[in-house]
Amino acid sequence: MKHLKIAIHIFVFILLTVLTQIGGLIYLLSLLTHAWIEKSTTRKISAAALKILTFVFLYTACTCWLVPLLAEPFGRVPLPVKETDHLKPLTILTCVMNRHYVRPALKTAAVDAARSMHEKFPGTTVNYLDANFPFINKFPLLPHLSHNDGKKLDLAFCYRMSATNKDTNDCPSAIGYGVCEEPLPHEKNTAAFCAANGYWNYSVLTYIIPQKNKKMFSLDEGRTRELVQQLTAQKAIGKLFIEPHLIERLKLQSDKIRFHGCQAVRHDDHIHIQLK
Ligand SMILES: [Zn+2]
Image (cartoon, rainbow, N blue to C red; front, top):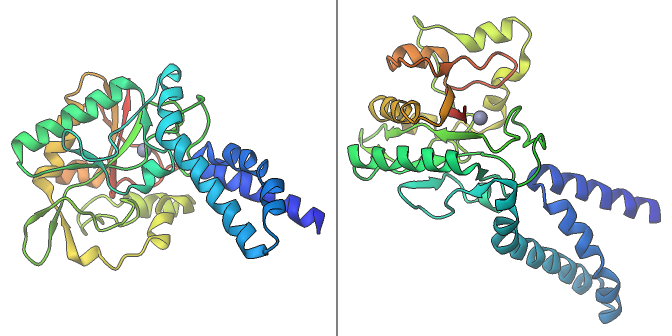
């Protein structure tokens, strides 16, 4: 029984660290309160509820107040949690899990691009997806290969509602990933090329993420093209990844736009930008 308990603690520690970076440490900290909680109540259900509440309280306090303060000396700042300058997280879970930290120059570039988008297309909000964790270079933000230094950020495409053809700031995927803008028959099919060369990982998210909203949305080519252009126009941005068939379809021209390679995942569901 004791071994099982230790195994569960280790599993929870690893899971929380992988998902949120600081969650594992806070979980260990919350274990210090367990002896006191077990003494204060004999009911098992009350003790379990108190343990969970203690962890949630400590995690929330650290995520909201302590982490942003401590991240700054590490050269990382949080992106806006609520819509600010027309930039916001697509899902609040990104911020809850501390996956919204970037270098200050990247925040400035993203905010400037979002502001320009709103000037050109009033009502448009740019949705950001995963960025980086707050601390430690080379600490991986799974499942991303490179989001480990504060220099990387993913942004959602812009969409229209298929039924009305009206602009929307929503996305077909709740997390922004995995619902892809497939290549047309005459376009370059990079996903098929990568799969044929043994890269099973390339389209893996399309099998995990529900596709039920796919038909409700269509890619807003005009606004997505403008978003890419605004991003590549930012001096601080060194590279931008988007799927090859969309480079052609949207007639994108910038030497900052590159192909990310089959070892990554496909980029016809989001844009990846990174600092020089
Ligand atoms: Zn990325």
